[in-house]
Structures are given as structure tokens and as C-alpha cells.
Image (cartoon, rainbow, N blue to C red; front, side, top):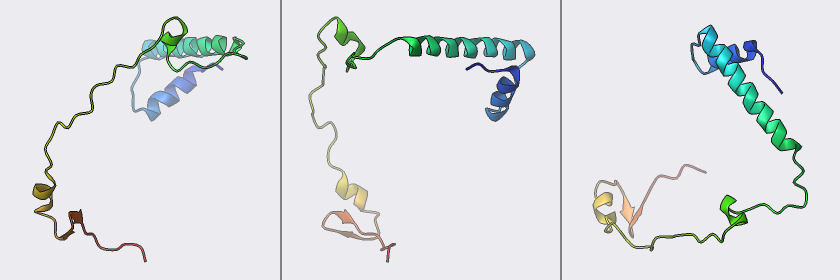
Length: 99
């Protein structure tokens, strides 16, 4: 798949961009280069290969560094519900909208 200068003009118009002719030509070259790269990647036979959970996992063990799950803020429910028109048992009450 390759784009033409008309395609670039249309995309620029949809994106509300005003491209000069040299910018339009450069964009055409860059986007078509990207499509060429995608086509080369599609041509590689990947049948029989398992997908990786992480790209580094093919040459080293990946250990996720997770932070400790700790409360960082106090409970502000009562303060937040002070301005509510209707509250019951700590819940906001809203009018029924589905019949």
C-alpha cells in the first residue's frame, strides 16, 4: 500500500493541517517508508512462534517490579457527601431514570 500526494492533502485537510508542498512531499516519503516497513514485517514467517508477554523475555527473565499496595489518602466520603441532595447508608441517591 502506498499513498499519493492527493491522499496526503486529504489527510492534512481532515487533521486541519496546512502543509507546504515540501512538507507534503516529505510527509508522503515518510508515510510510504513506514508502509514499506510494515510490508517487510508482514513478509516474515512467524508461524510456530509463541507471542512474548514482554519483548525482553526472549533473552532474560522478566520480573515485574510492583510497588506495595498501600493507602495514600484518607477516607473523604463524608466530606464529599455533604453537598449531595440525598444520601443513605453512605451511598448517593439519584432519581430513577429507567422505567
